[in-house]
Image (cartoon, rainbow, N blue to C red; front, side, top):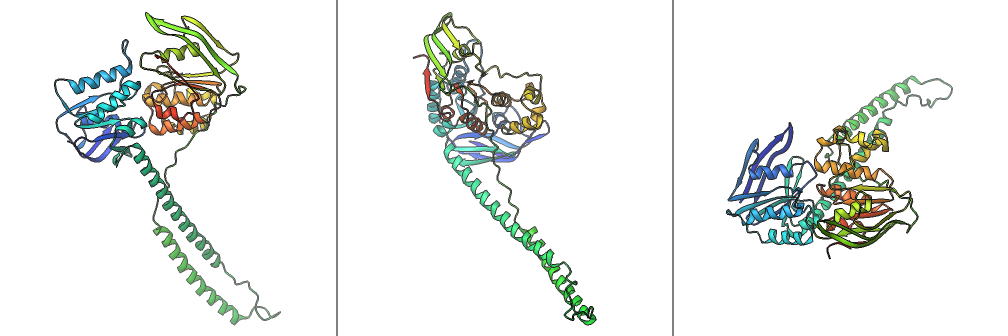
Length: 458
């Protein structure tokens, strides 16, 4: 059992939740979705009892197990750490009745991810998980809880059902807004006509030619004019009242999209990078005999289990790491952009605007940043003061502002909310240069139009 009743929570003078209520039945599998920073992790911490609400209550039946977002250490990958912590929560001395997971699929390879899907489906209790992994949500969730505008709203079904309902609501809202605008425009046209009729028409000529203005006619004309203006004035008041009474319908939010500037001028099918019989070892062999060519326009997906050397291979491709054996060739003048899991290409002491100022004026930078949901305030903060998700968005935005012949991405969607993932997918979909990506997010990979795949560890 999990019950949230009239709960409010404020952090650093910012309202995160305002009188939220949620009743979760036993054995429910609920995905938490929402933009970075709306409070998904905060909600999990409130349910786990790590922090207390300012008002309202959170009631759980039985033991709560909370598995936080994973990080790497010197000996284990993020995926290995996640699996170890989930196993500890499930198979420890005390059996959990509520399992809380924060971005559980980050860094999981396919076999570990398949294991997690089975665990969540078979868990005899409540599972509440924050995730941006759309495919994972589709596989395991029976409902989706959306956090937005300091509130929590539950949708029945998986992510696809949630998306269909949101799209339906968007079009309904759009239709209501268009109807409201059409009604207001019609009333405003009538109002303009009424104002035109208020204009005096005294200068019409008298019916008596060359005799000046007939006094009686003028008096009658003025009386008629006054009466007409009174009638028109009444009509204007009525029209204004109707305009005020038109139901106010907010314009539905339409996400801005950013057109990528990574246009790549390399001739089609030009060889950019070649690896010949490349191998690398760390005490024991990691991989060997890799032959790989990246041509202009190619879209490579580098796949493989955790620990197979995917990130290492990317560093050899970029030239940041030397292979132990084999050769690397890169064509002269190739412009390469690289985003790793650890290095985002940002100066952490500088603000977002300062990091990007060489790529355009402040107005253009802020406009581009808004497509990643980075506000002007966010862009004035030093990078180290931003969340991990915001930092990743900023690093990707930097790639999009530069013309590169090849872009190399290592797990670019980790820590990124769904709306930003969709925007990145659109931007990379317009990119005409070569793309090499390591990602466990199969949904994301599927949207990139991958043309080649190289799988390590086979």
